[in-house]
Structures are given as structure tokens and as C-alpha cells.
Image 1 (cartoon, rainbow, N blue to C red):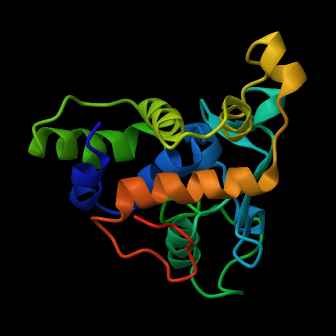
Image 2 (tube, helix red, strand yellow):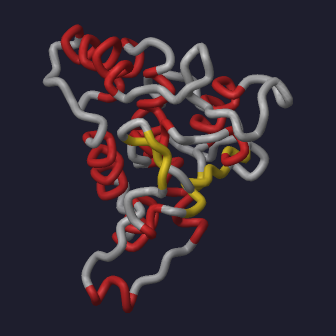
Length: 199
């Protein structure tokens, strides 16, 4: 998938949604259920605690999907811009919402922005789930351990050996997301100066 070509072609709010999807591997329902209180710019983290699907809020797909994810410097900037000034909305307010404050339907940004953008750059149309695969591929290409990838993707298990003998190190997760952001976005958008990514 040509993410670096795709991102500049996207309009709001599809551009930040895709950026979050590809840089965190969050599922579309988890992104659409994201609330301001679960984004912590000071700690550069995002909490996955809810999902929105079929017009209803619920738990994320798997128990392993619940948790705290590190944000790259670039993605922290994206979210800060999306959220706006502190105090402008309540903590329970959705990050992505319609003009009336209701949750977005995943089909709308897909049909209005994502699919047409794929057509313009003459690439096959992708699904929201494709961005999880992109994230996983970039983690592998960056040389990150499978156990780190498992934690970032929120998978419940890999193979017994991996679960038994490999351990997640939080610093490795942060390095991993910064590397993915550097690979995918360094040539398109200016990275946050706090990011430690070396393109």
C-alpha cells in the first residue's frame, strides 16, 4: 500500500483517521469510539478502551486490544490538532464526530474520501483493516520483535514459544511506533521535533 501517496490525497476527517490506523494498528471501530480523555499528549499515549460498530458502543474486539499504546511524535501532533484547545470540549467528547456530536459511520469517510483517493493515485481500493496489515508489515521491516508487534496489534496470542520466552519492553514499543512513523511519513509531512525518528 502506498501510504505516502495516499495521505496527502485525503480530506478531513479521513486523513487523521487513516494516520491513526496506520501508525497504531487500531481498528476503525476503536478509532471512531476514541474520546478526548483517552488521549494523553503529555505522556504521548492513547488508551484503547471502547469500540463503535453497528451504531453501538462496546468493548474492543479482544481483551488484548484493551490497553495503552505509545504515540509517535508525529501522531501526537495529529491528535492535538484534531482535539483542539484544552477545555473546548468535555473529556467524554469523541475525537471524531459529526457536526451534531454523534459518532462517525465508517462508511462515510471511506466512500467520500478514502476510496476516491485510492482511485486518484491509481491504487487498488483498500479496506480499513488494511492499515493494520500495513502497520504489522512496517514493524517487521523495521526489525521489531514479534512479541512487541503482538502487544501493539492487541493480538491475544502468537505461538506458545513466543508467549513463553519473549517479553514486551515498553521502550521497544515506543521505538517501534516512531520507526513506523518515520518510514511512512518522513517524506510527506514534517515530523514533530520531539520525535526521535531518524528517517
